[in-house]
Amino acid sequence: MPFEMELYSLRKKLVKKAKKVVVPGLEGDFAVLARHAPLIAAVRPGRIKVEAEKFEEYYNIGFGLMMVRPEKTIIVTEEFYEDKNKNQA
Image (cartoon, rainbow, N blue to C red; front, side, top):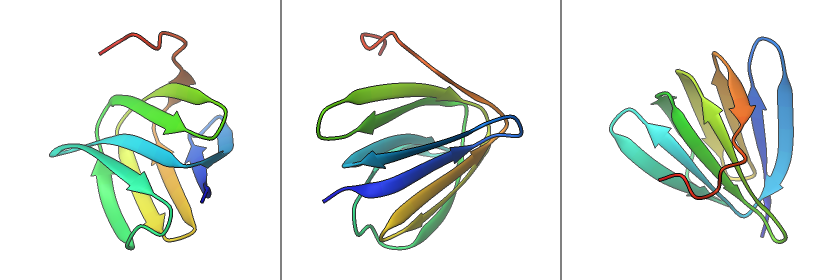
């Protein structure tokens, strides 16, 4: 079941339907799925992985905050841009 993932910076906004989002947290990476328990967490600079039914995308982010609700995940960060290199570790 997909959920809505919103990614914001001062200059842009991205909204995607996702099955899974992997985010770099301050104490390690963690995954968010639909119906995840509510959560607020700090995020560190790194790479977000967004998985959906027909695509997989990556975004590099700066420091920020993330709010997770069962139907939606919102990430607010200093900046973000798409990373086309899917092979990066």
